[in-house]
Length: 172
Image 1 (spheres, one colour):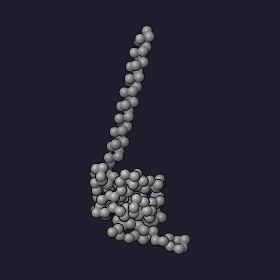
Image 2: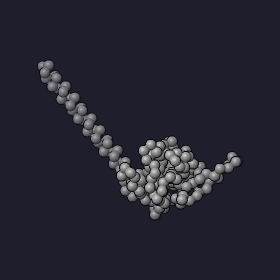
Image 3: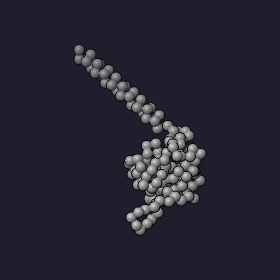
């Protein structure tokens, strides 16, 4: 009798482990397929004006250190400034010029979305849609700016009054 109980326990534990493994693999497959989708870039009104945002409404930034359409942000930089990646051709939302959207291959082989040849990033400290906490910051060797519909850096002009103005300047 004791041996029969022991076998049942072993079988039940084995079945539970198998079911857990199957559930884990299924969840991973679902998450992986979601992560492998095509990115969408849209426009959103913020305190900086109309800027590019991800499908979740997160501000998209360009990095002045990037050159020739290639990302200069890797390792710990990409932890704080996650690149906007896409499995295939990105989608243009309302107000975004599809002809300016593209991709560039990152050092890890993933495709990073570009706009007007500028690799696009989000900022880890922008925790809600429409936040622009990374605007004008200097991290990892260069400045970061939100991106306008024209594909230029949105530079908030320094003023001495309480009202600020926003201008866009072309990215060299």
